[in-house]
Length: 255
Image 1 (cartoon, rainbow, N blue to C red):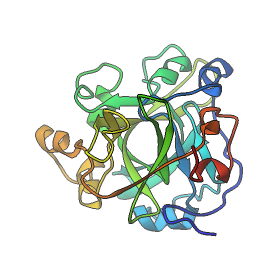
Image 2 (cartoon, rainbow, N blue to C red):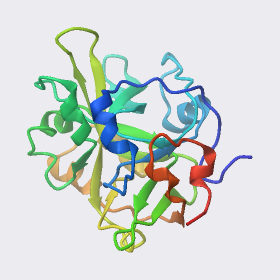
Image 3 (cartoon, helix red, strand yellow):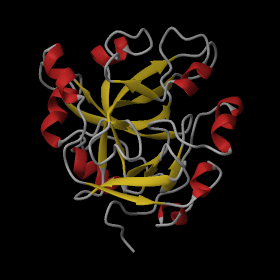
């Protein structure tokens, strides 16, 4: 049955990860804004939602109900050479071009909106490689009691988050595309759970965020604001704290 906030089935997601990076996210995760999300849309749904170029290769991955840092998910960006939006899977956790190895990305799955333009880790990507990270919902752990909650848009199956991407070339092997998700102050709806939230991009902001039109530094920063629209928020079971768990049951209401 189709969910109000998302849908679909995909094939098992390929991902690039280091065992040491993933280990810290496996057991007893209790929240790091934004550190887990779900992906339930089909390729056709996300293609239509974000208006990719017809030439973009389909990524027919399975639904995932517990995407964690160092795993892969879809990102979309504007490619001036092709004159439109493209998309591809990328590793969650930004690896800057100057990094010696990929492990630095395990700690760079979020970037604070207030400092992203100045931080050496993120400033180059913020200037030239902004993207949209389409998710279905994200999880947050309430600070007082560590109760996990799922958060989705009330009127859309896909939640477009503001992200940055990089391409890093290891000493040996193929380049690795990676991304981070930007966070900002919590909205009034999110504040009972946490003081931060991911930046959710209304469609009116996509063109400027992706660099399809020129924008001033002030205009870009103004995009990175708390989401003013309606959110659906509900408690879920604590099994979501273990990244080895990945089934539709994780997103069901529970406590």
